[in-house]
Image (cartoon, rainbow, N blue to C red; front, side):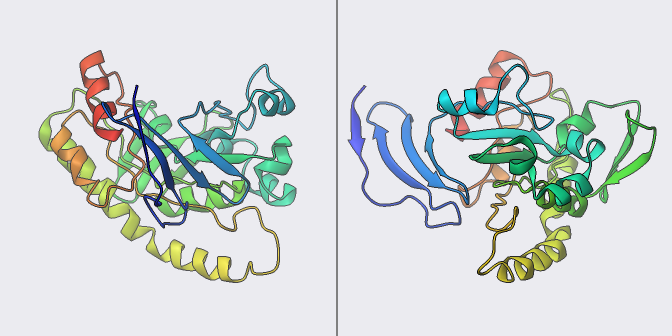
Length: 255
């Protein structure tokens, strides 16, 4: 595979994303970005620590293996141990003794996977906790607030997840909700910016966290493209219950 060197940064956004090399005959590329905890080189494998632990692994083992960033899940951590535990511990990094970056998913897919115990509206998703039976509303604002409590380096805005077999009308409605939610989250973002300004000169688990916009998860590529006008999004290739062709097309678009 031939590589072409790339010297200038591709993006001067919050992640300080730099494209280092790109393949001449494909879309393969090598890049680097920085979070508040470390420098991350891509492409990379992101171990899944859904509930603030990678099962069967010590954090030291993950570091020794070269892991640069872990994935945790807002939905599961909201239910247990909950935001107050993370606030008392100073964030997920102290909670699980992890020195590198953490990316948190919004919980949208986990809510989608509960078809008989949840209701999704413009305001968010109402569901019943499998831990204690509580009824919880996970709104875009609450999702971000939880991710702030977790101390995530890269947060995700709550998306409206639908089945891969959904018709176009359902898909368009879901895309519309996903796009409008960042606007609903704006007030929380303003509060967060004020909080970040107050972080000067001190350390806090959520200072410097990144919040990229999210591409809608559906098989209709023209609708997925609506979410990508700037080219700087969290473009998930994951489509619930998707067939191999439907799985591969978004990968081709997102890479």
